[in-house]
Length: 67
Image (cartoon, rainbow, N blue to C red; front, side, top):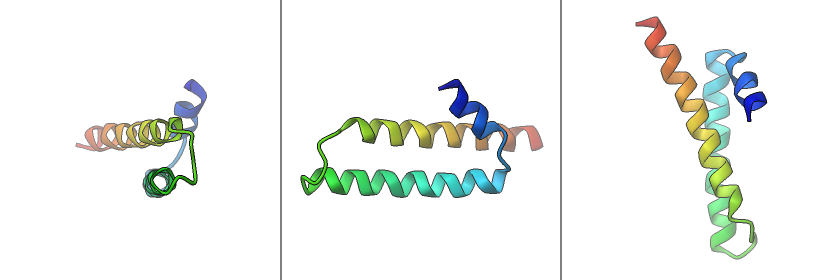
């Protein structure tokens, strides 16, 4: 997990926003797959939510540093 956070911290803010959109789309797709019984691994929903939270946290930190 520390490697994921370290990797995200090295990215530009614009790239973080792009990754946020990808993670949100991944969450939607995972939920849809679960609802249509195409997927059975519910842990993917938790992973996607945590990834979104990590990215949002970094974006917020950067916004507060600028202020």
